[in-house]
Amino acid sequence: MGLINRYREYLPVSANTKIITLNEGDTPLIPAVHISSLIGKGIKVYFKYEGLNPTGSFKDRGMTMAITKAAEKGMKAVMCASTGNTSASASAYAARAGMKSVVIIPEGKIALGKLAQAMMHNALVIEIEGNFDDALNTVKEVTSQYPIELVNSINPYRIEGQKTAAFEIVDALGDAPTYHSLPVGNAGNITAYWKGYTEYRDNKKARSVPKMIGFQAEGSCPIVAGRVFEKPETVATAIRIGNPASWKQAEAARDESFGLIDSVTDDEILSAFKLLAATEGVFCEPASAASVAGILKKKDMFKSGDVIVCTLTGHGLKDPDNAIKMSDRTYKVSNSLSEIVKIIGV
Ligand code: F0G
Image (cartoon, rainbow, N blue to C red):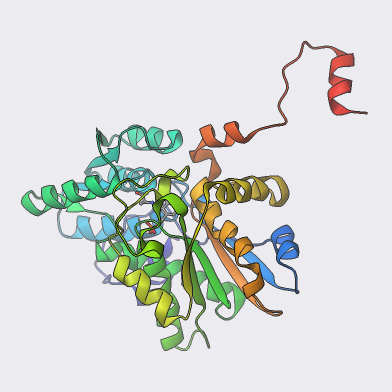
């Protein structure tokens, strides 16, 4: 039914609002059997697998709201800066609403699947020499001067839509988890989850709120380091951001929840990325795996009885290049029984 209809009473829509939806949300909360055993102490880890949204990432939650409200206002075009997923989602929802979309992306730093999505959804795709932060500044400037709606997460409707992931988790578990772990890039999602968890507690739908634990990539960790990164770098291109727009809100979520924001290295991200696919059967993109790399790094912090939810923000198929680069079990031989049997090792 889509998340606006499901959580209508918590969202800024009226009976007259025409909803633009692709039936996003309602993603599975998957028990992480192998990761739970690695953390030990009887701790239960779950994945909130956001890769199963219509365009393959959590951005669809925010975009159904942002595009619905843009359409309600009579806007004919939307624009965003993106490391890839926002552009895929914005262009899909804009197409559905019959609007134009313009996306500004950092040249050469977008995972292939995401670029293909924006192109197929008929976005005007503009690659710039510069990073995400430069692109966002340009988008702010253009949208302040022309009748084009900005649909990055500084658009408050994006946060409203994204907060519903926290509602779904509480609805599935019966209460909030002890910890919620997620990757942090522009910091909209950690802001949204915290808003969702606190609203649900205030409405007596949950007895507690989780400690919010966010992870940035070491080469792009402005919140951890306490300074802007002029040249952010990481293999996890989705979170290659040096000056997050929701920096203050992310710090507030961390502090109000008694959580933390830390960094993980590219090696830690890639090994979690591979571990998830190889042992849990869950294929997410590298940035998503930062949430799991983070809890593995911090595993001594957790206590018996804790419940940890990790958001897997995007689908692995978005970034086939990094996946294929990781492969060390692929062989090319002539179609010969003896050679194949030798490789199998039987
Ligand atoms: N994971 C993925 C897969 C993402 O695409 C993003 C952000 C994040 C995590 C971080 O979320 O920015 O709310 O802290 N992607 C944005 C984009 C920046 O343009 O697609 P955040």
